[in-house]
Image 1 (cartoon, rainbow, N blue to C red):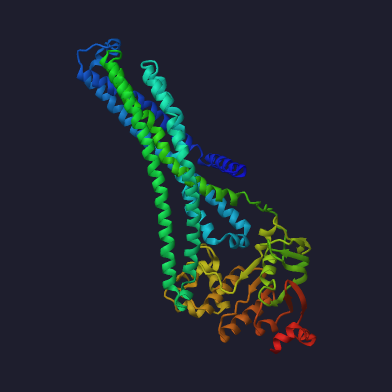
Image 2 (image 1 turned 30 degrees about the horizontal axis):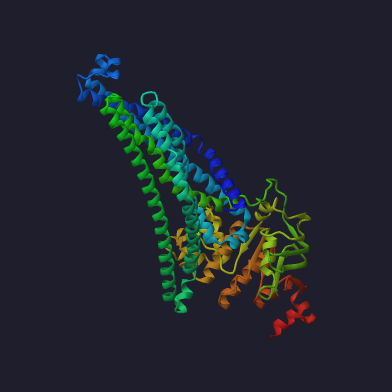
Length: 586
């Protein structure tokens, strides 16, 4: 393990321990109750040993019975009552300790999940596209869930290993130092062997986690591309691939389980050998009369309890490794430089948007934008055209603030768009992609993006988008449910629903990525006319591929290899005879 890797491990372990504060004291209470339960266990074994001694040897004298020459301590029914009370107290302590530990772990998970979501929202879609939505979704759910056993199981057991064995040694040494010495010398063997096994298990856990993330991404790709797989008759081949991946994953899982069972066997074996050693020594000393029976029995009852926290630690150690592996990815995301946002509103409509000498390049790639100088004034329709890879989508991401210029500035009403004010700018923006994002839920929810909506405004938005008659024909009207990705709606209806969302929220700036590219001519004309009408009083920027969309634009901006090669109205560009005119005349 390199020094850098060790440093990363330390950082992750420190981060995990720092999350305990989000349990709001529940983990501390759980550990305190569990430790007190362990102390009561010592008392319980003492009472049990005394009771057995009293029942088996009622007339025998020992140091303990002589010291406790009282009717209370010789009344069997009273001793049994005390034993039952202790047992019930321990059961209650164990129950509440488990409840506190689980609730504390759930609080921590909820806090981490909330922070992770917040970070992902701040990073924007450019980050999620780079990292992969399936990988991040897996981290958000299964990754964070794997931390529960770390906080609810591993951390309390670590505390018990420090408290309970020490308390048992303190109780045993004054009455039988030989047995105490055996316990003291054999105890370090358990963590020693656990560390030896743990190195290999940690590596297997990391490989297992990586493969699980890849499986998540692969499976999401299959679900999203199911139609294409069926059309190209590739579904059977993909089924075979999924089966192979699943079998390989199962083999790796079994490999981890083998290590887990082996470590459990080693720990149980060591504990059993140590307990047997204590029992043999006590047996000989009893035979020679060097120890009272009640003391010997008490020590023998304490021996398994002495090793119990270490055995539990061996079991929870695998939960710790799973938690640490997931935490490495969590720390990587949460430690990304986070954009700070101000609460002061910096922008007011109408807007003049200006890109001044803007350059941008993706990592390890050539410039996506070069020396861009564009001004979008107040209101009207602006069209951005160009071949695939010319920088159109990057330009839109730049306008929305999802990526930031490597050189130059994006100005909004003469104020620079930065990470600090992006949220305030986005409050004025609307966005419609080529395939509108439709959520699973009611039509009204998809328009208002909230369950708390104004019905009159929803209906007005549907009328403007030309969907009112369709919605009226549905049994449940605006409360009708829409499937995932707009299942149950045609392409044109999904695009109109996205337009209705715009009309409901009335953004000052509307940005579209060719919303009519896959629609029939009639639907295209309807949506184009609606967009043109909206542009009369708002700023509308559209990535365009079709002539009908471009012709009505106030200004057409032509991109090629990240540069603006020409701009102007439809007539001006035709007269210029450049790239635009060539495309129109094709």
